[in-house]
Length: 451
Image (tube, rainbow, N blue to C red; front, side, top):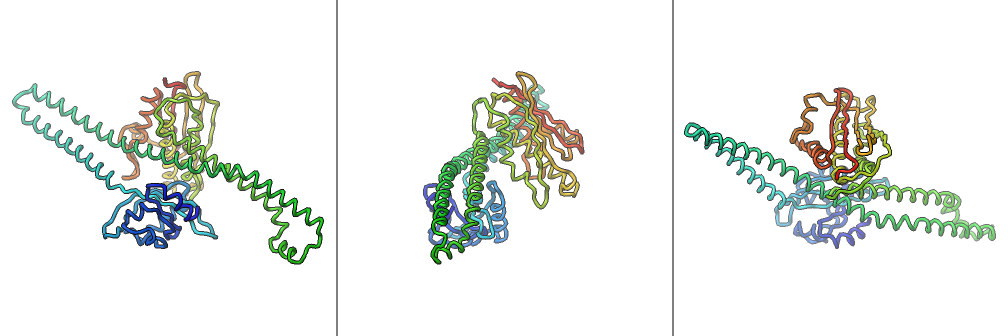
């Protein structure tokens, strides 16, 4: 996408959008960005992104490099310097449009979002929860004051206090679940929108490749006939033939069209997976192919499976059986697959760090197996060959807010929510089996029909 094409697209969108180079140069923006900064769009053209933010140039370049090298959208945070001297904290979402190559710099699309209003609402909710916690404390003090006066009243106060404490815990849990649900819903909407926007132009290109290839072959046949009838062309034509290396062009053009065809088919497969995964916001029971949900989740996580300078490639071993379509909540099942697979990847990365071998000997892998138990039940097992889980941790895996990850790395709700989805929503079973040092296996057993 060129800056001009981006500008034509961005004009009809209300979100603040920027198109920047891999080095941080602003190629073009839309009007919402200029309004956020209090500047005119003409004043932004050609400027460097780190001139407009409080973050260091090094941090900005690192973020853009992460966007350039990722196949997925990269979330970040940028603090804008407004023209009136004030600052504005924004969440940024970056995606590469044109990857970096020796011939050209990367083109990166950045979407900015002002989170001030959402933050204030979050703070207000926390204040309400704090007020409720203080009320619990006041009732505890009242309990102590009335303890000597009336034993019966003491018991009632205790019961009421306990009820309030349970309510507080439920509110805290509900609060976190609502935040996660909003994120997953937003992700589903974004993925569906991206898939739709990509699918239209790719379908157009794919549909015209055949005709373009046929037209090219017709023109090449015409050139061959001309060469046969005019074996000694004028010097001007002979010079042009040598300059463009006509023989190589004739041999290579078929390969070019084949590679373009393969590329568009690959994009169409990715779009199909994105559409499948975007079922996140579906709330109705539907008959679906479980394997499609697993494959679409793997597509979303593909960037984490690839080899990096720190980790080797994580191999996925699929042992799929012939499954019937399952009546379920497809979006919620995708969420379960996402949680378990992401945890498996985390475990394999932790295994590499502990062994200090960068996967050279571990051969990291995740095995996904599906099978039919009987006409009413199917089972999906996801197993990794990481460090495994000890019994003390395994017994708490499905408890709310329990996590072994560092602060800021996990909420402790992924497996809890997965358990609720499988057991309560689908009347199934979710179990974990593990031996320390020999990996872990999560077994999902659900009925063919949850009705």
